Length: 317
Image 1 (tube, rainbow, N blue to C red):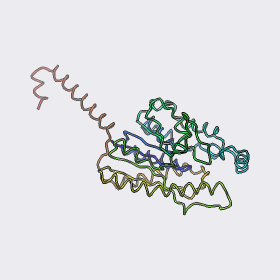
Image 2 (tube, helix red, strand yellow):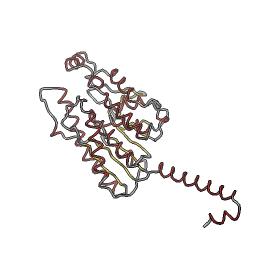
Image 3 (cartoon, rainbow, N blue to C red):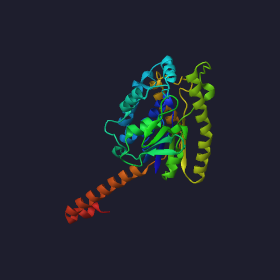
Image 4 (tube, helix red, strand yellow):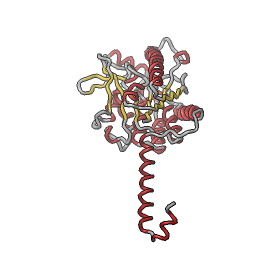
């Protein structure tokens, strides 16, 4: 079984939209998708329409994103919210409108998706992982809002009596979810953080908070590398595609999404070109091929059965 795993990546999530295009052009289609944080936007778009058309739709969504869509209001507005004990630096309602615009039109619940998909969030307090998608009735908007509720930028997302925050708080690259679902080949689309490349402003509280979180996620990378090494020992193939474009962008800069899509595409093509020249076929593609062969065989048998005996012998060798 082939799985695609989407990491978090904040304003650099558009890298994954380019990476997926490169994978699909090579005929690599997942049987399963695991995603967290902003990676859930592209992951769900692919699960709803696993085609180049679906990827193009996701890329168009990324190209339309502006700073005010994701982080509405400026620095003074954030200070005003802190002074009023609002619990977050930004209002969640404009962000929810943005997330709804990124949702596939034909999918509102996980049961509407063409490919099984799980999205992770973190339960505030207990620190355990919550998985959206095991229940086909789970709403996609709930998954997107919970998976991207990164503190302190957005308030925790209330869901069934619990408060959920960004899934990347617990695991920024949910390889374990794909491994537990028996994936044998994993393409990990990892938006890599480089804290040393960040443009830091020590006098800016918001920048300090954001880059502290980024440093924490960078530390998680080491844990995930250890998990990947153990998985390889069990015979699981993991293609770790590191997407490092735009590492020096400010956290709220969405002006380079077209360039980031191109960068993600180029990085993934370069990685795939290093692989042996043999097809990577998942269960979904294999089943399609088996069905096509079976239909061809059945039609050929029916055709032979209707032929005169003297002609039939010349076709059966």
